[in-house]
Amino acid sequence: MQDYYYCLTYLHLALGQGGHKPCVQAFGADQFDRQDTKEYKSKSSFFNWWYFFMSSGILVSLLVLTYIQDNLSWSLGFGIPCIMMICALIIFLLGSKKYRYSVKREGNNALLRITRVFVAAFRNWRFTPSSIASEEEGRGTVPHQSYEQFKFLNNALLTTDGSKEDQKVCTFRDVEEAKAVLRLIPIWTTCLGYAIVFPQSSTFFVKQAATMDRSISPGFEIPAASLESFSSISMILCIAIYDRLFVPVARALTRKPSGISMLQRIGTGMFLSAVSIAFAALVEMKRLEIAQESGLVNEPNVTVPMSVWWLVPSYVLFGVADVFTMVGLQEIFYDQVPSDLKSVGLSLYLSIFGVGKFLSSFLISVIEKATGGIGCYSWFNNNLNRAHLDYFYWILAALSVVELIMYMYYTRFYIYSRDERI
Image (tube, rainbow, N blue to C red; front, side, top):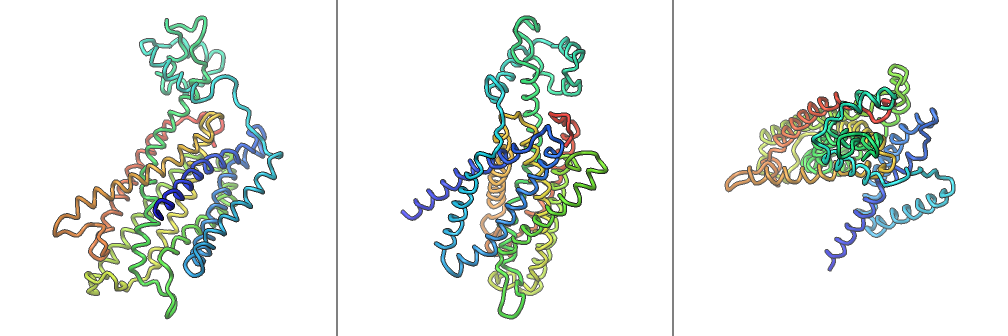
């Protein structure tokens, strides 16, 4: 019965987060007017500061609520966040009359319009709409570069007889919306490598830390899980530096409202993530070497005489990588989808990490079965001194590099759906 209540709790949390996370970001960004230059620049900062305060909340939870739950009461540890959420809801409702609400386009919703474009393009696949380009370019309504990409969707502009006479199946704007969504698929796919690496800092890194020397002074040890606070601290510091120092300088050099493009920001984070997991592999190799030299291979409960501080650079790099990639993904999946699909776009961004966690679990299961046969020690053996997390980390590092190369290749052909190259 107790397990049943736990499952219900997890389900409610998942449903609440699934509805809250994509909508709160989209609604917050909608408060900035794209037509106002000052507000348009501030919109990019919104995603930075949203992540700043989220990271601050995570840090408080790691440092305060973890202590309360371990040393005082689990009920109090859950009760405090509950009270805070009620207060946050009241504050949110008090501002209802001040919020801006986006105006939807008339006609069908965006999902139906995009679906209609694909259906119409498939129906007219035999025709070549070569006349559309010159006609629309003559009117100044079609950017030639955009028209040339995913040309098969241009057939949706034709009627079933291959002409533009009488009624058009879809408008040019409908086709551009479909292309905008289609352009995001390679980004979604190539970021899965980053999402597979993402969970390791809260799982295997903690297991590594538990075997290492965590003492600060005689009789006092750092809890292994609390090392995650270094990621949160690095996020908080990096966001402040990025938004207040880096962006103004980059904006002056590039003339872009956000300093660097969203794609450049995402790629930078993917690179830092690869460096982080590679450094973790080197640390694990050294830890195994010290365990071997100290005769602790068969002593999993004995602390390996290696300082846990060697793991801190990986945590810090993970935090900095999140500031670049996660915030960049939030921004691009908000900005590059039709106005009616902002929340759906942010849901797609969140799905990257949901699918990434499933793929991470699948990869671990496959490696566990492949390396954990009879008489063999699995790479994920409970005795980490017999395991080989370093091999797993190197696989993740190689995967990250491959994904980064693919990402850089695909983004060379990416065309922003708006004139602003933010």
